[in-house]
Image (cartoon, rainbow, N blue to C red; front, side, top):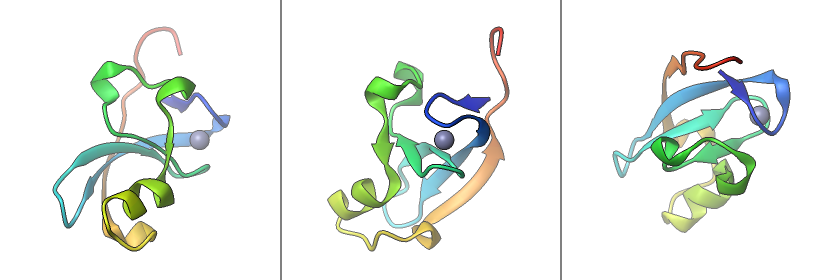
Length: 77
Ligand SMILES: [Zn+2]
């Protein structure tokens, strides 16, 4: 599934924040992060990976994330 922010360049990946166990969706290209993918992956709900980790009291580092599978393409993308 394509990232709505950086378009065709970014792959969306499922990830888990190691410390909190929170499941999120991230873009490996532009550091976009969605905390509620079921609510819709769009620019309006986009967060920044580093900003979200800081909000959780964690270092703004990708190593805080356990990366999982790519999000399968849905719809007409
Ligand atoms: Zn992106």
